[in-house]
Image (tube, rainbow, N blue to C red; front, side, top):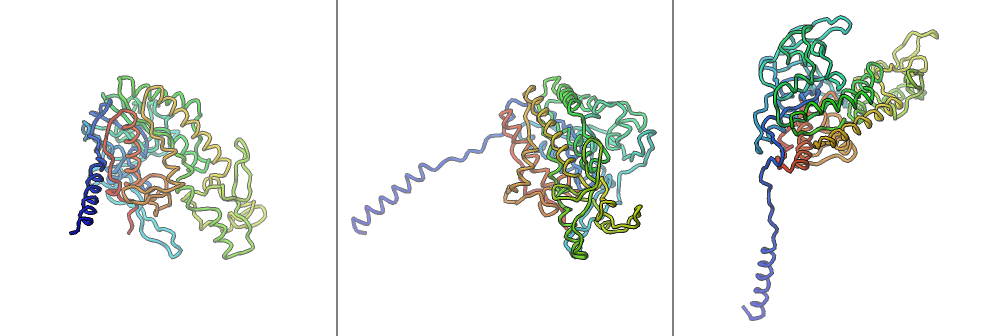
Length: 441
């Protein structure tokens, strides 16, 4: 080797040595509980908290609930046992749910209900209310208090355990003899940390009924009850995390069956048809028929086969949905003004949630912003692409409202990040790729 080459070689080695000496160290934070105590974590909320998916509550969904995922990660920082009111193995299908059976020739999905191995023990008629489905009673410890269907405005109503079968199964007495308010039930035993995701149904129930079958919870009442709930949950010094109400109009339930697609389908058979007609909100409780636009949201469960079917009118039989005299029923569409009304109330609810959380020093998972960002931009996490598309997106289950196991894992990470940021903890994030989206046949 010549002297010139030797010098060049020495310079290369020296350069590589210098580079290696500057190589950054990647430090993985040592798991720490920070300023929080996770020894007894409880989850307060509704169907999303319970692990509801595919239009039902069943064992596999419960096992993949976001609180159970969070609790597993909390074990690395001193989290204790987390017990859920699971359905038994021989009644694993719980309330029943939907499965994906295949696809039609036009690509639309075929879903089928699961009706075997249910945990239904009967039905009871409650005077002035209606029929309530009753499920096999659960006895034992509870950390996940998620009750599908519960609204914030129902947490202080003592007889509610007689009106909601999911709550009734957690209580010792049978309907109609229960008299335990939900907020009393969840705070009956000591706990050190909580998550609270109440409030969704106060807007969702109105929206999914097309504005026809329910009402939005009064803003002032929501504020009073939310402050009361958080006051009860923090009364003994427990810390916690709360979540905002998602934009319920942004879920696949309202964005899969569109007025544009329905009209295009009709025009293939009859090009002369110019519009689909709906019965739309004018103001107050006044509705009137008008042509639908893309801003009117059809529900996922709308039976499109009804379009064009003859309907008796004072003017003779006319095709359903294709004339002002035979508009699509209110229950099948959340029209533009109802959408605006829903969004206005959700905005108010979320202002309340953030303000109350701030007053108590709680962590906040902004589910509204988080899920809307996924709808707008998609998300890639752990090498898995996620979006808000129905079935293909991987985030939402077959009911178009609740999440898949993968969706619940993503939400769990959102909660964990909020907790870590607020309390200086280092709960490890979950690997989202370990959880599946919609199961294909």
